[in-house]
Length: 279
Image 1: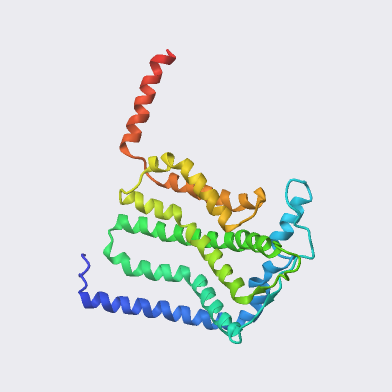
Image 2: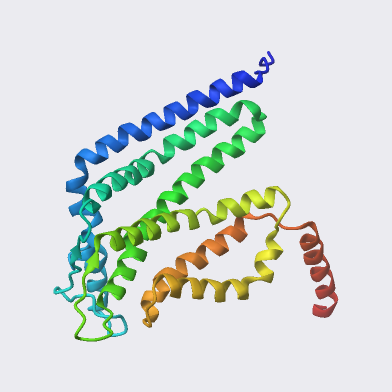
């Protein structure tokens, strides 16, 4: 039985309820985050400021086995956070609760988007889009995890221990710390959507696999510059921590992109021309 088409006002009403449910979920999780934020702030947000952070402990065990890696076993490492504005702690409490709510409700928000767009899709399109939303959500969380456990701690450790002059006392303002915290974690979450974006562009016919083969060298240089910008360290190990996940995303994106028809023909021609030579 064919589903009755919805009018413009029906679509508008459905969009209104979708937005209402999404905002309500954000509001509920933001209130819960606000209530637990003092504990979460000490145990999660400020965890990378001390040598007891899980990443530093793991790297300490690895660096003790070889002299190639930097020394991460310095237990005196500590970043002192200070507040210089009267209302900063209150606004940080609110904004961090909102970003936490956005992170936790991301799968539900994607589900609401799926519910809104799915009636307009065919059955084969629904299967593809369902896979896209699931894969995109997983990659977003994976990117945020890489940002929290690897990119942000390594960037913070380098910048906080960098010394221009011994006369300068190193203290980090609360606003500066939180700006970098939000930026690096959520940027990595967005960057990890690169395979999904590449797949969508491939479906639209805008790119194919030859694009990634052609510009691989350019991409390596660009990713090295980007990694050096994210973690401005002269240490190759720290640079590699950021570069290799980014390069892995580039190759994964090429895997999800379909070949151009000419690429298949060229491969067949290459095989046919190689046979007489081998004979």
